[in-house]
Length: 162
Length: 89
Length: 110
Image (cartoon, rainbow over all chains, first blue to last red; front, side):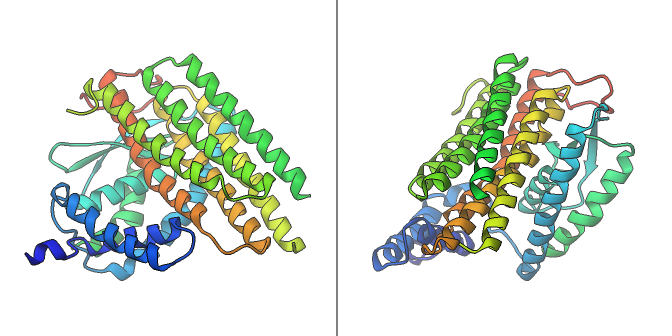
């Protein structure tokens, strides 16, 4: 009974509510009511698609991570722009990245980060969730790329999702 | 000065859209064409925002949002179709 | 409008337009599908993000109410670009798209 009235995904509900306030012109009584209805209805309807409740242990570390990724995205586009405009041919490589993360949400955050940052796109994940296939645009050393990703992105994520 | 920058930007984004059309026609594989359409709709969003600045109105933002949502869904649907042979299994 | 806002808007517009163009050049001239995937996911996303930001600054400087729908679109594009790149890479591996000869390593069998 009370399950029907609760918010099973509080973060999703919060994001939906905020998004609705941005979409409707200005905060008014009507938009707050409709926003609340959406924030309740959509998590209830999509309940079956969520494998489990995401376990954030250290949520306050997220803003630091997001800022770092945003900075890297801008740096990444400069290096990709340089590669695109330079006349020499790039040296692309497929890299199998050994994952140490276990939580599915953490893995998908890592994969998205990899796709947006310098010269790498995540292409696939193995069936046992242990290896990530990465395509690098221009690389001389495979080990260097693996170490860079591990130190820069995977470690902070491992601290967030224990 | 802003008008010059605005016109230059519109020219650059239009040129980018033309290059995407070149890739769309040339292929050579299906994923290349889907990627070209994916980039093309993002460029269309940029052009709509630039049109909004030129005309001094925010009305076109809603259409940019719609194109962003529909473009993403169609790219994923096409990729799924290429991989599985059907969109909804 | 203050000259500072005008400079900021012009710089952001040219930056955004330049990166959108570079992404498209990458799409047109890089040698194989997997390398072409890099241009649109990074350069074009950043370019459109900069154009959105200039639009936010422009309408704020014009004295309208602060409205951040552009930021919403940018965040949406930032979230969806890796997903569509990943789906397309999977589809390409399934079809068996050729890679350039200088590629190190191989895509997985699907």
